[in-house]
Image 1 (cartoon, rainbow, N blue to C red):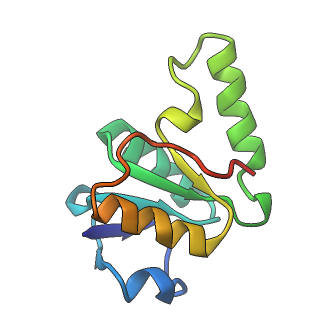
Image 2 (cartoon, rainbow, N blue to C red; image 1 turned 60 degrees about the vertical axis):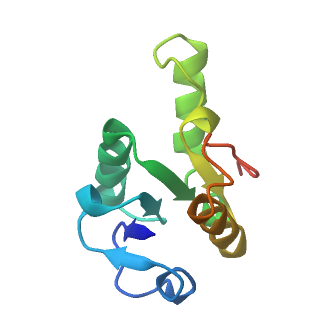
Length: 117
């Protein structure tokens, strides 16, 4: 499985050793968004725009405000689906690996979130 890691400099060996890491979001099957800056947010928006399976790594509740904003936008009718409909949100790297393995084995395809925060 081809995984694109946003803003990564080899700091996620748990993911890199089990997957084929690609340097282009367009080449990927899955996009992994770790905590990061504007480039990570840009990659997140591009992944969603392209309809890529996207795993948001919410380590230490890093993306809490973004997730809350997306839910609020959904409740107000600005976004059709809640974040759990298009993002896989995990707060533990071991859970991220489990989700990636499930995607690789076609056992997950609906963007279910096991842990939001």
